[in-house]
Length: 195
Ligand code: UDP
Image (tube, rainbow, N blue to C red):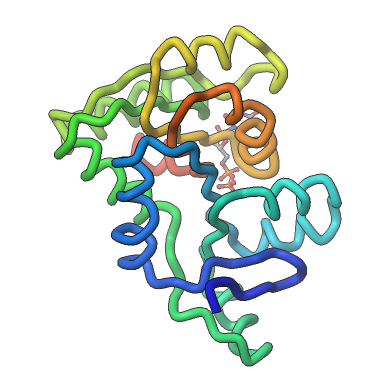
């Protein structure tokens, strides 16, 4: 089966390697518009509470099991997912890909200083990567200026670090205004990159 449903959320039944080589890299090459959610148990619980959020997750292209709790849950249901896929690791693989292929990356979220520091560190590790644009994460989710700024950057990959559920809500609301792009919520990853 391609999907394993847990609490109404269809998790992609895949390893990290298959996710990258069979789904994400081809999607980038074909310039598709993709929304990926890396869902940990907190996100699954939030979806259980908030119907609108659950609907947003169901409408994403890929929901990935980010958390051993989700994998254990799948095993208890006898629909085992093969492994945990950490969002932070997927982000790293995508940065590596972007570095190799000069893909345009947009970074949205976190505090201004944190974001700046995170991008500095990313650029140090991946010098060929194109920073198409950046914006801190403290804005009204409906602010048209922010989405216009992202659009003008013509990004191939948009990393959205607003925390859940807001990052998924933002992506869901605006992704269709983009001709292409891989949109991914990255939670507190920019804080991790800032060190
Ligand atoms: N954040 C943001 N705007 C907000 C609230 C939070 O950009 O209005 C950022 C915050 O600075 C942090 C991330 O979102 O970088 C949330 O990280 P957290 O670890 O709280 O969330 P999780 O990883 O659990 O989704």
